[in-house]
Image 1 (cartoon, rainbow, N blue to C red):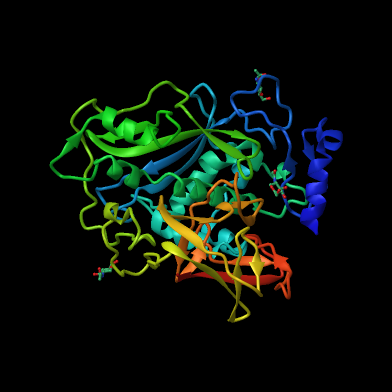
Image 2 (image 1 turned 120 degrees about the vertical axis):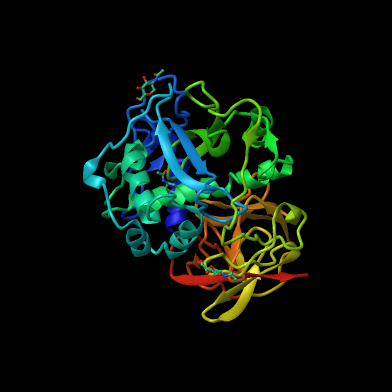
Length: 414
Ligand SMILES: *[C@@H]1O[C@H](CO)[C@@H](O)[C@H](O)[C@H]1NC(C)=O
Ligand SMILES: *[C@@H]1O[C@H](CO)[C@@H](O)[C@H](O)[C@H]1NC(C)=O
Ligand SMILES: *[C@@H]1O[C@H](CO)[C@@H](O)[C@H](O)[C@H]1NC(C)=O
C-alpha cells in the first residue's frame, strides 16, 4: 500500500516536489525520494539539496585491487577497495565527519539484517595488510563520510548508522557489475608469471565494458594491481542512477605502456565458481574448490522455473512479470552467465530489482543475480519478501526489502 502511495506522489511530483527537489512524506527511517534529474558534475545550475545531488564529490570511483603478494581473495576475481567521491576536477575530500568514524562495521551490518552482505565482503573485500574489518572502517571513515547524500540529515527519522548498510550494499552492488577478471580474460588477458600485456590492450578490454569510458589502471613495480571505474550519479548514491564516466583527473594509468605484468594469485585458497558450470562463459572460470567461505556453486543456467519456498514449503513460483503466484502455470526463465553471476529473462523481458521489487519486462535494467546454497541471491542475500502469500488468482510483488512474509527462490531446470 505504501508503494501505491509513493507512486501516486511520484505522479503528482511536479506540483509537490519541484521547489525543494524532493518529497518528504516517507516511511520511518527511509531516505527521501529524490526527484531532481541533474547528473553529478554535469549540473547547469547550483544544486542546493545535496541529499539528492552528490557534491562536491560528484565523481564516484569504484576501486578494485588485484593483490598477489600476499594474495587476497579468490584466484579468479579482483577484490573491492572502495567507493570514493572525487571532486569533478580530480581533487577530493577525505575524512569528512569524524563523529561517524564507526568501528565494528560487520556488527552494524548484521544489526541491519545484512549478514549475507558481510559473508560476501569476507570473500571479496579483503585487506592486504590488516584485518578486513580495518579496511572497511577505513573506507567508510575516509571516503564514505564525504558522500553528501549519505549524510544523516538526508534521512527522515534517521536510525543511528543506517547509512552504513546503504554504503556497503551500494559498493558491493557496483562491484558485482564490474567483473574485471572476466572482462580481461574475455580479451585474452589472463594472469601469467611470464606473459606481459600493453596498457592499451588492458584499457581497451575494460573501457569497452564501461561505455567506452577510460578507467584508471594502477601498477606497482610494472604489475597491474588496481583499477578505478568512474561514475557520475543522477540522484543519491544509495538510490540514484550511476552513469559511467571518464577519469576526472586526466591521468588514466600509472602503468608502463608495454610489458605490463598481470601476475597470478599463486596459492590462493579459493577459486570462485559462479553458477555457470554448464553456461556459455564457464571457460573463463576455473573450477570451484570446496573450501570454506567460497559461495556454493549452483546451476541457474539455461531454462528453468523460479520456484518459491515460504513457510518451509514450496509454494508456487514466479511468473513472467516477476510476481509470485501460487496457482497456475510457472513462467520459463532463461539464465545467462554475466559478471560474477547471471541475468534472468522471461517472455516479458529482462529481470531486475527496481524500487526494491523483482520486475521483468521491456525496459527493465537486468540485475546480475548470484546464488547461494541453491537459492537466488541479490547482492549476496537470498532473502525475499512479500506483503503476504498470494492465494487464488492474486499475485504478490516480491521485494528485497523486509516485509511480512519471507521467501526464498530456487531454480528448477526445464
Ligand atoms: C529510493 O527509491 C525508493 C523506491 O521508489 C523510495 O522509496 C526511496 O525513498 C528512494 N530514496 C531516495 C533517496 O531517492
Ligand atoms: C553544481 O552544483 C554544485 C553544488 O551546488 C555547485 O557547487 C556548482 O557550482 C554547480 N555547477 C553549476 C555549473 O552550476
Ligand atoms: C582450505 O583452506 C585452508 C586454509 O584456509 C587450508 O589449510 C586447506 O588446505 C584448504 N583445503 C582445501 C581442500 O583446499
